Image (cartoon, rainbow, N blue to C red; front, side, top):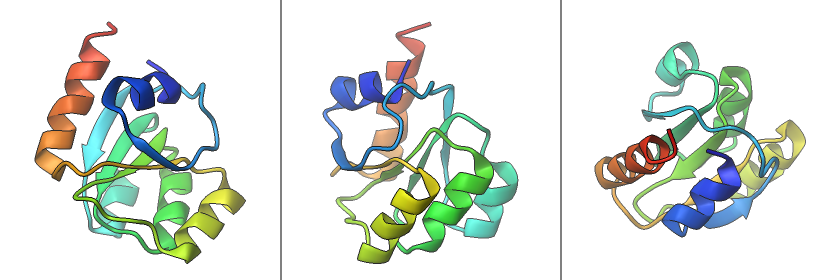
Length: 112
């Protein structure tokens, strides 16, 4: 599944789109940046409520496919600026993290 297909499938809000054709291989939920940096797998959809500029740096270092801000969280202006600099896709949804994770998982599994 691609980021573009995930956006369409789940009707996600696009805050910044860096690579619509990036392959999505799984998901990861976490809000502690150092924990995410060491554990999020490359190609994952990182689901979080964190919205500061450091999220873009961690996403880039972790090589996640995209960041999905859950719970209706909007990105800080600094996050959008750094997402543009680092080539990180930032998406959003109103769903809670648990619900978003289930939807992401079902969408990915439905394409396998």
